[in-house]
Length: 101
Image 1 (cartoon, one colour):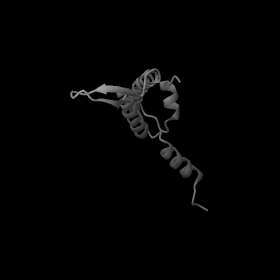
Image 2 (cartoon, rainbow, N blue to C red; image 1 turned 30 degrees about the vertical axis):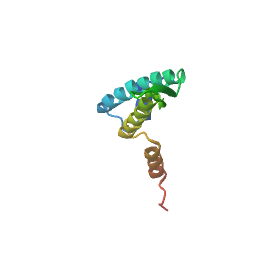
Image 3 (cartoon, rainbow, N blue to C red; image 1 turned 120 degrees about the vertical axis):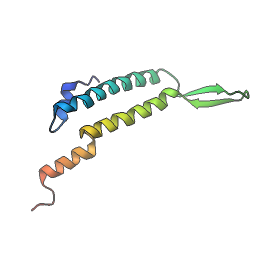
Image 4 (cartoon, one colour; image 1 turned 120 degrees about the horizontal axis):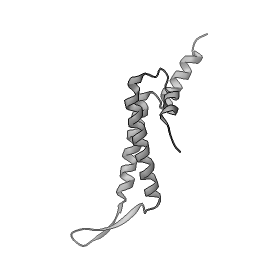
């Protein structure tokens, strides 16, 4: 899925020009995430590794570890922009006036 700056701006309630830095960072990180994800699809999740003692063990593909870190970074950026599911839910509740009669 191709994500554009215009799409992100349309999702942000109360967009300001200062949000551009975070938006650009999100887009670059998202592009990196997509590349990692695609590379990981084409490779094994576990690799054999022989240590100094000569023992062979299965280890996680380093790309899977980086993918997890990248997802956390994307979530933090979304949080900074007010675009997490919980933040959107709170906005909807405030707009609909839950608890007011």
